[in-house]
View 1 (cartoon, helix red, strand yellow):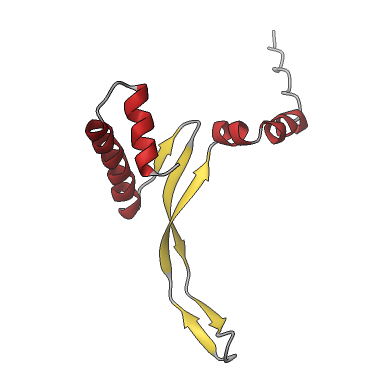
View 2 (spheres, helix red, strand yellow):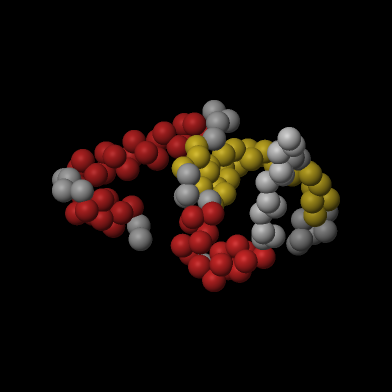
Length: 112
């Protein structure tokens, strides 16, 4: 699905014009980009979170010449999917993970 198809889907499901749906998508994306750019986190429960990840400077090797090079530090956007999103994509893995968790411990008895 591309951006145009997403706009059409939003417009059809919520009785909006394509222009209105496009503005909503643009506002949403702009809010996410602006917040992450400033170093903040955008968390959408059940879906995932967007945040900034800092990659440290490091040494590398040019594969064609074998020369050592310095790779500069970088700030990158990072998306971490939420449990609900993971379960929707792969329900078998989610069920397997839930079954592997140990049973909750019973509550401690109150002293009299």
